[in-house]
Length: 381
Ligand SMILES: NC(=O)c1ccc[n+]([C@@H]2O[C@H](COP(=O)([O-])OP(=O)(O)OC[C@H]3O[C@@H](n4cnc5c(N)ncnc54)[C@H](O)[C@@H]3O)[C@@H](O)[C@H]2O)c1
Image (cartoon, rainbow, N blue to C red; front, side, top):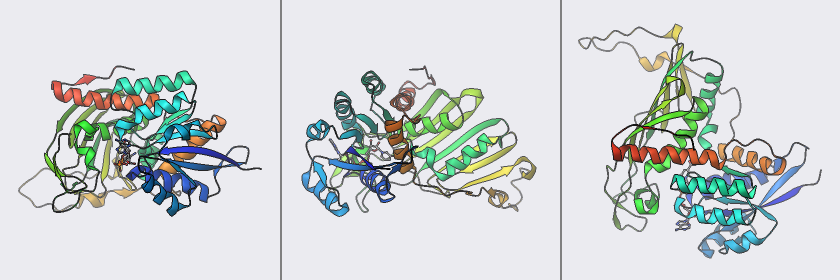
């Protein structure tokens, strides 16, 4: 079968996500394995066209990875009919205008989350893509984490009985940047630059909850900016105006209560940087990025509350590890392969801009819930 080459315009490749996960671990890794396999047995290789603001940075990346095409001229890259896909991993604020441009050029569009900063913009993007008849997709990488795939396996297998609640704990200490450099970009901590943990993480929680457990029916959030002074990439102090912690309660269909803490101002006393505990009538599970442990009702001990006695049981040892039973590939790469098949042979791709807009809606409701001090219902879009 003859190989096909698909041009992919990539914005934001000098950034953390654009470079590591999308260029190196997805697009280039796909080419290294011979391309995306289509259902007719043929393969499609991807020809990345790197787009950004600084030619020198793009040239460095291109040279390092043997990429032929790079430019600071997005319009020119979009004008080439061989470039059929536009991908965006820029800072969130730059996403909507660039993606609308690509849609107007008839490109299929795939972007990082959140698709926009506001529901109005996210819906505008989804509608523009629908009206133009272009394929559209948003990154929902957490669904492909080994730990969450094992959790989904448990849900699908009926392990839990009736699911009662979900407790999510996400976060780690992000250094302020003075005596140790911060490990996240400074725009994340400035409201005017599109920062904030709610806009960053609630879109993830929305698709995780909806794909594993059910529709989110209401949102309540308490949001904080715990650390108000930080130091940027050049060592300059700045006021951290965006939220760096959010304590959310989500009611799901079927009466499931999900409570998720998200924080960049917490020190990790967990096995992984994110963990979800799911309790059901027949069993419970704790899933992280890679691992998942379970306790079945038949193996559930009977602790008795007595603060006068020392703890004699090792509660953590009473859980059983869920085996991998398969090889887990990089989730970003899997989603890229799915999107390419969606574009070329209309294979299913449920992670559309419409679902991206639902994620932005949950974030917006979280912020509004905090501002108004009340629980808010999620109306359908
Ligand atoms: N899926 C995930 O798990 C995940 C994780 C982190 C970030 N993200 C998302 O990915 C996007 C990028 O985040 P990041 O952490 O890689 O950020 P980053 O700061 O490392 O990279 C941002 C990129 O955008 C470019 N950029 C910066 N300011 C710009 C501007 N004003 N105009 C145009 N381009 C600009 C930068 O040059 C860089 O290429 C964000 O939307 C973020 O929400 C997703």
